[in-house]
Length: 73
Image 1 (cartoon, rainbow, N blue to C red):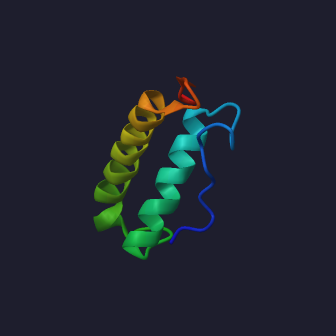
Image 2 (image 1 turned 90 degrees about the horizontal axis):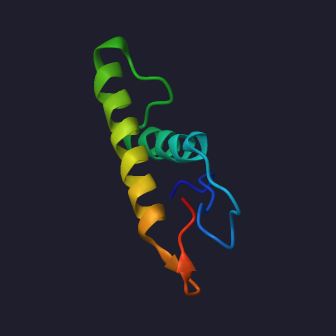
């Protein structure tokens, strides 16, 4: 699933930006919703999901401990 989402934690990514986290969240929401661009009546729910998933992604990356060091975010 979501083969175009790249791994965002070290050692796969040296630095991760908010844009990287948002892009991964957008790909995920597009995949599970089946919409590349949602209809106007679904746009708010789509965007809310992207923002929430991006925030949780940031929390996850920030809390991971990789090879004895702190995570990527």
